[in-house]
Length: 451
Ligand code: ADP
Ligand code: LRH
Image 1 (cartoon, rainbow, N blue to C red):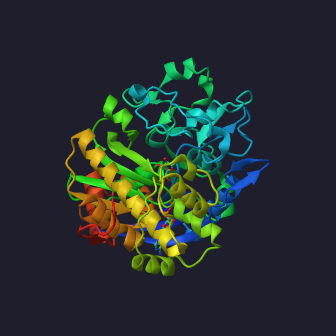
Image 2: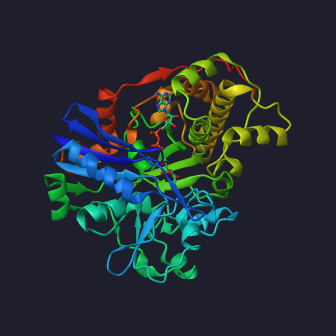
Image 3: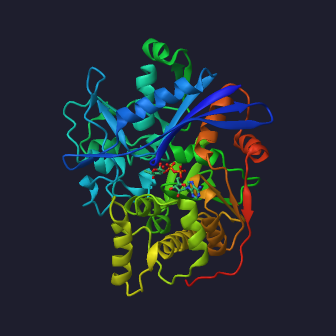
């Protein structure tokens, strides 16, 4: 059976077809389009209409399938008025409107979330909500435009700072305490599906059903981690790196809060216990500032150089868009280190620093959850970066299994296949990925760079 996975990442959107049988899964790219944020009158927005157009173009190119599913980055949302029209254009989580947020407002023991300044709740408190009737997270918004159906998909709802991770419902007491209108939060859904609107079917040239998947891209990516047993950590490695373990229940201890670990909801009641690491975003911004040199050639050069400097990728200076090479230099000056010289050294400095941050996060996840970790699965676009994978094996002291690259799209398609009875539980879905995906293992060796 053929399924279509729409996966909107912070750097690109893609529409993939997945041909799934009881024993195999074959993924192919139907369409890829850049996700280019737009600054308007000082505010950084997602170009939501261009993204929606990319989805329509992709669905048209992909052609008919059993169903389609949508996932995207978390946290961000659109607001609808009483007539169901979008009010304003969704704001990007890297916009400066939350730059002054330095403390959490949602209680850790309720939401279980790490502190991130741009969490939905912090954005909402800086938003005019007078005319707003409905809040839709980005995949729910695209789903609404395709099908006319309104709902809050659970995995994404769990990233808002307004979700009670234990009671598995909106944290209504918190919503009331913050003075946010209850009406804007739609019912939380786990398995909603429905046909596309007639006008959408006319535009696509066929009709299809949109099946609700784990619409938070990280939740979908973790579904497709090809782990064979529970003792694994994952690094979902794209624009962000999400580093942690999968658990049956949240960890809401004080030690966990202090280590800034999050408990996001996954499929089948699982918890993604992880920390956000700033990820390849820093490299992406360097490439933009350097006018897009060839990444693979640059990585080959970075293999050959040595550099001492280490940055903390999670330093707030690296969050907003901007001149990352200059910020790395400034960071090094501030911390008494010799800055990297030239692009290859800068790239190596970023990758070593990320690998060290991954090492800390994997250690913390294992220690705070009590879950032993024997292997690290690195999935997403970063799994194509052999140097990063090797450094990660060195920094964690564990074998790193790299791939699949398009984990989120695979997880998206697998959850659709399950809705049609083609596959069973998480273990079965992962078996299928293990049998079909291209992965490469990097064994740990001695570290070749300073701590
Ligand atoms: P997102 O879903 O956040 O848009 P992806 O999972 O698509 O991110 O990953 C994008 C990242 O993958 C890029 O920033 C880049 O660093 C890395 N990447 C993509 N292609 C390659 C490649 N050929 N070699 C090394 N790294 C790559
Ligand atoms: C990764 C991701 C991550 C969130 C961030 C906003 O794409 O969804 O899980 O923290 O974007």
